[in-house]
Image (tube, rainbow, N blue to C red):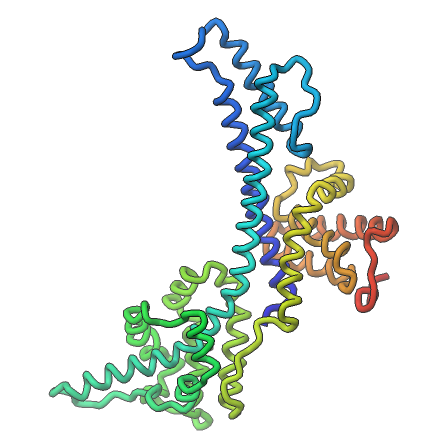
Amino acid sequence: MLNRRILRVKAMQALYGHFTAVESIKEVKRNELEEMHALDPAKHDFADKALFEERKKQAVKLFNENILAGEVGKAEGVEAEVVENVNTALTEFENDVQKESRVRKNDMMKEAERLQDTYIKLLLFPIEIEQREKLDSEKEDKAYLTREKKIYPFIGNDLVRQLKESDTLQKEASRSSISWDNEHRDIKSWYRDQIRTSEALSHFFGGPKPEEASENDIVLELFKRVVFKNEAIASYLELNHLQWVENQPIIKSMVVKTIKSLQDGEGVELAELTKNGEDDFKFLERLFIDVIKQDDFLEEIIQSKTLNWDVDRIALTDRVILKLSLVEMMNSPSIPVKVTINEAIEISKVYSTPKSKQFINGVLDVLSNELTSSGKIRKSGRGLIDNK
């Protein structure tokens, strides 16, 4: 099940990509302005080279100084044409940034939803393995020199049967067009080289069998011992699910929960992607949007507490974590400040530098007290717990 930390991480990753893209867009516009005001040997006199160099510098300088304003105000000593070109560049820059933001946000939301698709696809995996065994079994029956008949533990397995017969699972797979139809070669290879040869599964294929082992255990063991551990299968999942490393623990938890419910005789009960459903996705979307909307203010207050640092030299990951945390403090009244700070520290341990946790903790501690005193942070209900 998705938890709020995973959502915060996804927002952080999306914002990191967004701010990186914004810097690239700025550089593109600067280069375009320089080219626009550069001397063209085919059209201009080389005697005017100094004039063109000055126009280039003025254009880039005006662009940099007016990014926040969005347009040039007074520009004494600058030609009207240069001002007009810079204003056009600023408008294009703003449009490009807004477009990039929309795309990044949509990708972030889709990536969260893809978790469900991967979960459903993995639940279909044992069904595909049974089908693979049926094909192998049919070939074996036709062979004349077979001396020892192989064991095919997935054929007729009760848990596999329940997965096949689950209307809920099949409807969900059909709704999202989820299947293994394009991976039959992969499945054949995995079955032959990874599953039948797995030491952890050997007793299901004729090896010594522990007393407590049950035939139905093979489905759960398939996931726990092979799918979520095998390098070949993991490579496939990483290639087709770009955030697999971060998402694997969630998906594994959901799959294992579902298989255990089958073992307990509860039938196929699909695990919920989130505890609070739509509210969790709104929380994720709101974090992303609010950081972008309040970025100028966030940069300013972070700068005020890092006077001995050039904000641009602070690791971008740390700046994004700080911004996310400050927005959460100000815009999520039901989440205690201490929870937000602790989450920021835990995320920094995984995604930033070794010293980041102390830096982030110190900045957030000071800013949270100031923003609370100024009334920008207001907590209510559960948000007041441990918020002293």
